[in-house]
Length: 512
Image (cartoon, rainbow, N blue to C red; front, side, top):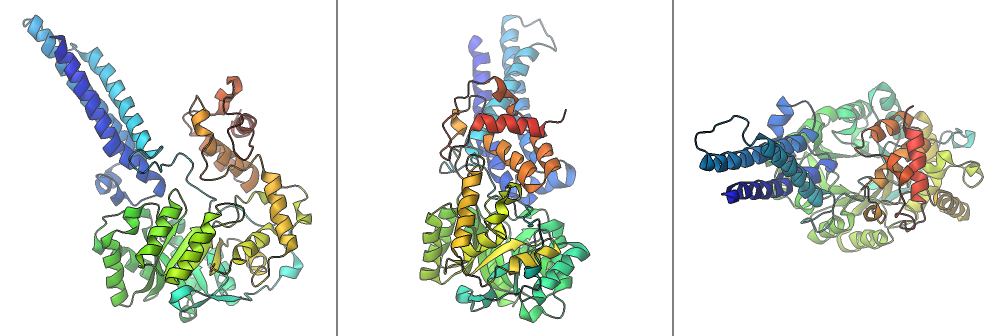
């Protein structure tokens, strides 16, 4: 008779394992991409009825698994008890065992989901455990001094944008933080100084970027190359989105921008082959192109599958442009990917995330090595002749002068010295993206990469409140490092003293 309960428990745990992998894991894997609600199971309904955001999908799936575990095991215990003593009935019979099974089921489902999402089990071992951001597009990159010799800087070089046939400015206006009247003024000034290409998206500033750019381009639309994304104000469109939905998203962008067409539409933050090759998005592009509403197709990518996505896109021959994370001193293989894109498909190549952490604001006496770290970093990117242009976020009037001063300038010995000094100074503090070598050595399973990133927000970006807020949301923080034997020591390939950095982060980011 004992087998009845055992079978019920085995069934509950098997269900938890399967549901955790297929449902919870699927959601956890998709969540960092920032998808539109349609990218999740029952997404539109939950978005309409549960105001907790996409994380509600994970919580709901775990609660459902726990409820199933409770019901199955409680039913097994009651059936076993009834077989022994048919006359004895109790509402509480099996409740304790059911509660234990619920907890075990939820835990197993969470572990199965984490195995898929965090460690990439079943996803080619390419999960999100090594971090999801190269640098944030809105990091504070402004030089502390607004140099007089930068004033009035203009675009001095244009480059052929691959098979699009356009000659675009070598510095491109990133509009991630362009919004409102101030953003409109900055954008208009950049355009007047010769920037003829800007990159926007429906999810930049909650559609505020497209609206501000629509006002900024009045009267000069035909002089500009405009890129936006297959996206909505609340997230990227997932693989399998209906063709009509893709078309609707672009038409909404056209309305906000006040134009009849955009030159380029990207598959946005494309970190999965399924989104890159979705036949629906390609059919939607073909329809929009036939109607004269878009001209060229591109994709943007940075993590965790950048090289795989880029190589598939190049091989397909379907893409005119690629926008990818590219900066000095990391990922040597990217130069080969970029060269292949130009050589085999004559694709336009946009470099993004060019500032490698933007830690220069916190470097004492760094000015002696570079007038502007941003200028040196931009010139390094543009020293690759296969790069068509470099996109960088403009969000203060100074940026128009500071960034455009790098246009057309050669990358020289002073710039190289500045970048080498930057790398030397951040050694032991800059957590290299796409590494994750230390994570398996931590017995507490700390998100070391996130902790160091939040410290970077606090110390280097000037985002003190944001660093504290994000750190406070971690389920387990670096307080455990204070009494740990530090088996992580020596595991960092770039020499970060992990325990020293994490405990320091805890002191900085903990209130009181």
